[in-house]
Image (tube, rainbow, N blue to C red; front, top):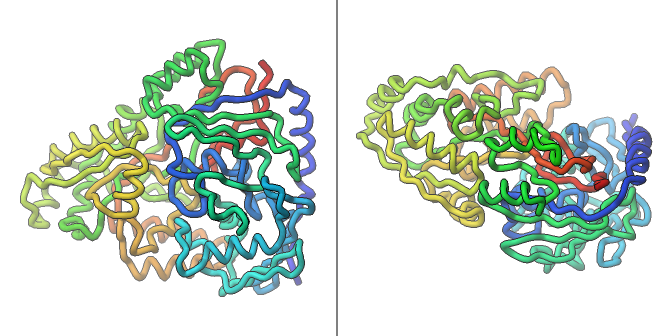
Amino acid sequence: MTFRYSTAGLSVAFALTASVAMAQSTGLTVGMQLEPPHLDPTSAAAGAIDSVLYSNVFEGLTRFGPDGSINPGLATSWDISEDGKVYTFHLAEGVTFHDGTTMDAEDVVFSLDRARAEDSVNAQKALFAGIESVEATDPLTVTVTLKTADGNFPFNMAWGDAVIVAPESIENIKTTPIGTGAFKFDNWVQGDSIHLVKNADYWGEPAILEEATFKFISDPTAAFAAMMAEDLDVFVAFPAPENLPQFDADPRFKVLIGSTEGETILAINNKLPPFDNVKVREAIAHAVNRQEIIDGAMFGYGTPIGTHFAPHHPDYVDLTEMSGYDPEKSKALLAEAGVTTPLKVKMTLPPPSYARRGGEIVAAELRAVGIEPEIENVEWAQWLEGTFKGKDYGLTIISHTEPLDINIYARPDYYFQYDNPEFQTLMTDLSAESDPAKRSEMFKQAQETIAKDYVNAYLFQLPLHTVAKVGVEGLWENAPTQATDLTAVSWSQ
């Protein structure tokens, strides 16, 4: 017995997209706060890469829909063996890369083998760890055999880290990305913008827009000025929430308030003394006033969280009370741990407003209990190299916008360096489990485990604020993955 997934259910969506195409097609200028460090989504953890390229330029076997659903991508359908170990993907016909070369099963084999290779630098290498083999059965059929059954495999293949690339163009992918998407990369003026143009030879439903420019503006005040001057048509993840009411009242604009998969955390280096003591980590958690951070840094936008899990997920457990604001308890825990105060610690803050503004508030709260953060503001590339890769930090504030990514806590070498063998076993068992009820219980156990271990101080779920000119349609309101998918966007001026 086999289970088959197909594109039949997408005909209505395609029909709706075709009706939108009657609107005036033109170019669009999209503002973003973070610039990608390079343009290879398969070799970096920077969400800014996917924010520009996911679905627009690069595609995977499957793809996320705006509602978080898993839809066919380069694979129009797939079969799953009865034991859940073998996935047979059937590829779309007539697909070519932007350089004119054919995309076929051999490119899928190359991409998945590259991602799971011993020397792979893929930031989500764990997504591919369960693969036993990848074979090109014929030019349009790929057979993936897993070590154990994994019902999450189509979900894993929808990540930006799993997009299909070609051996012919891989050497220059960081500066000249060659994908199969509805838009082609045209130009990158580093420090300023990335320009995409419509792919006239796209294999699927063509883009409505003729071109798109992603403009990078890190300063919130400058972002506000650029939108008000109409130099931009859209600003995704608008960095100055205090200005949203002004846009909302302006007939030229509309404001979309959505949710993301972004768990915003005060990350703690668990191997760095004295943070290797759970009492010290718990002291940090109780020193933080989540609502004060949401009000002060996000102007009231954001949902408090007590673990690394999205509140809109059906398996979410509200554990905020476990690490509720209690500065006196923080002081007592530090004393029990034998910490001499003031305890100086390096707190690294990347550019996003939630980090810089939230960091100032968190620092004041920590000082109140005897912890003295020494703030170091860094650019995004510095954060990725020094904090994420080099683990050179004590505390940092970051939003993890990858979907359903609690499994990162099963990686001892991940940047917060949490090493719990029982949790690692739980994640292995979860990956192999197909029963929905059992998986739900495992997800809840995982949330409780990291909350009890106070791995990090969990702050809030990051909202998505998008400001757009009236007439721009088809933008994602929510962000089930790190993407600014423009493939169905239209603009009638």
